[in-house]
Image 1 (tube, rainbow, N blue to C red):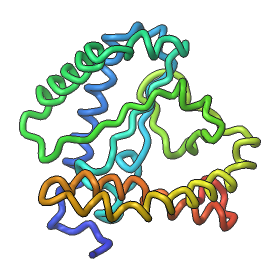
Image 2 (image 1 turned 30 degrees about the horizontal axis):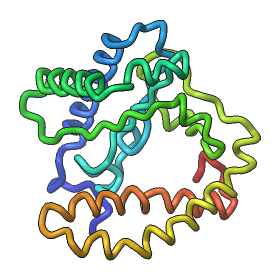
Image 3 (image 1 turned 120 degrees about the vertical axis):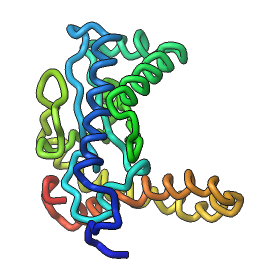
Image 4 (image 1 turned 90 degrees about the vertical axis):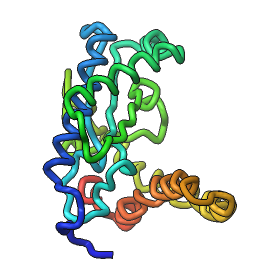
Length: 211
């Protein structure tokens, strides 16, 4: 597979404009559904936010559009996202807003909304480097504490070791996935494999930002 983004791939600028429209739709809807005073910040990270040098850097409708939401209080997660009805209301509005701005998209960006409130309580949580984050609304992104960096090599090593169990069972995940059903299994593989490069670099001693 070529490592260059050639003419046979979708236009990068068009893809980025469609990603921007999805981000704007999500931010607008969140601010409509949740009082602004109860939102600490909304952030964009992941492959959609980074520079794309090769077709592997952003794969339309497989790569996530990572949106991280930090609320003023932990209890607000349950208050605003505690029922299926609440979630579907936001989902429907985001979809409608996106298509109103992009009637005939060449792709439908795949958003992934992550609640930061519970995530930051995980002992293995480490904030992303600031240069990999775009602040969409609110306060600057979380700072990285020295203590978190000190244990990052251990975290990356353990996560690499944990992948052995997933990979050993992977053949049974694909054997009964004919045709379009294979798509989800392949996407799940990408989600597990894509961080391996940075984790190996981390274990080898590279700084967090470099890795």
